[in-house]
Every structure is written in structure tokens, then in C-alpha cells.
Image (cartoon, rainbow, N blue to C red; front, side, top):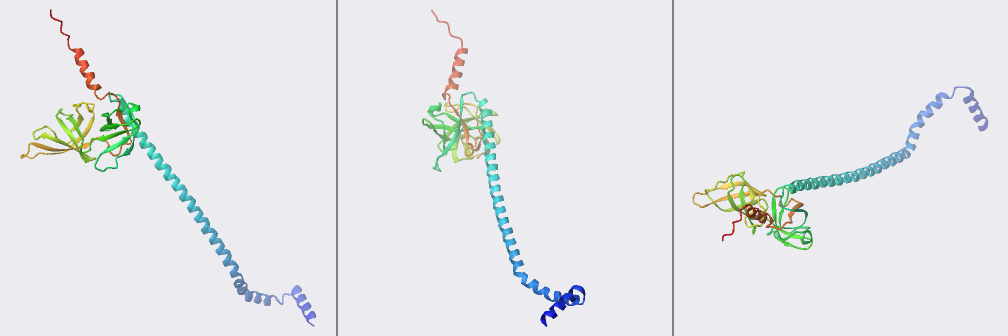
Length: 279
């Protein structure tokens, strides 16, 4: 009986549309169950997709961060090279205006003692650098060699509290002595009479007196002049022209420190007439 019934239903389904409404209702009724039973699979697929997307984003983020770090490093290196080239060009231009023979040196160390302004350069006696040699950068005088080794030298900066330098005002040749204060950004003119013709903005040059420094090199600019009627001397502050703590490359004068003075003296002697011997 069941077989005949099944056969009859099959024939009816094949050759008639009597069961279409029933089939449609059954499909509508079963659809929610199909959706529910398929939910775990869909959730798994969605979770897997989200996980893959997150991993891809993390990987891409890591890759981009790495690229940014490389670009920043290259940018910093390029900026450093450009700054170095600029400083070297400035030094070369400055060297062309120096009468004495000079040598480019690099600052390789700084004294750990905060009370002294001393730097180390990578040139020494083997390069022609001698004790007392003047050291300058493209902007002005920095200091002088106080100890020359075979391959390096110690340089005392003009801002050291124990340093003094004869100077003169470019505008009117007034002479003075610029002394270090222990401040990298300030020198002082000591024992300058209250009545001296000096003003803010005056440029100070090395005078060459004493033979320790060549004459005519920029030392600093007057930034403050204070005159007290009750005192004999004025208080004058000077901003050094040399970049005391910022110069990586410097110029070392490697001629004899007195060569300029001796050349001048020889010229004067040659220009003077030689007296005729008297009988």
C-alpha cells in the first residue's frame, strides 16, 4: 500500500500541479530552519574573514611602519650630510680669506669637566698642528691649541673662564681684552674705560697683540654696554662669533704662530734704507 501511495504521489507530482501549493508552503516553512542550521557555517566564514582581514591589516601596518622608519632614517642622514657639506663649504670659503696656512680638522671630543671649555680635534703634530695654534670656524675664532699630541690636540675655547684675548673694534680700532666667562655665549671686555668709544653692535676682531692669535679675525659682537658714572670702567658683554658648541669641522692654523708678525717686520726692514757706513 505504501509503495502504491508513493508511486501515485510521484506520478501526480510529475504530471500535475496539484502539489505545488503544498510544496511552496513546505518550502516557506522550512526556510527558517535552513537559515538557522546554516548560521554556524556563516559565522565561521565571517570570523575567518575578519581574522584574515585583521592579520592582513596588522601585517600591512607593520610593513608601513618599517618603511616610515627607513624613510625617517634616510631623511635624517640626508639632512646631516647636507649640514656637513654646508659647514665644509663655509670652511673652505673662510680658508680662502686666511693668510696663514690652515688645515681642516674635526671635533672628536669634549672635555667632561663642565668648568672648562676644551674640545679635542683629530689633528696633531704629525699634521703640522703645534701648541698655541689658533683654531677657528667659518664664523670666527674658537680658541687655541693648549696641548698637541701626535694625532690629536686639545683646544681651549675663548669662552673658558681662564682665557683672555686681545681684540680691537673694527669701527675705530679701540683696543681691549676679551675674557672668557665660562658661558659659551658670552665674553666680557675688562678694564675698558667708561669714556671709550664702544657701542652695541660693534664687531670685535683679534688684534694680533701678544702673537697668540693672527690679527683681523672675527671674535664677537658687542651686545651690551653698561656705564656707571661712579666707576672707572664700563661693563661690556660680547657674543662670540664662533659656534663654540656647534662646529663639527674647524680650521687649524698650522703656520708658525709668529709668522705673520715676522713677515711684517721683515717687510718693514726691507723698506727702510740701509745707512751708508761712515768713515
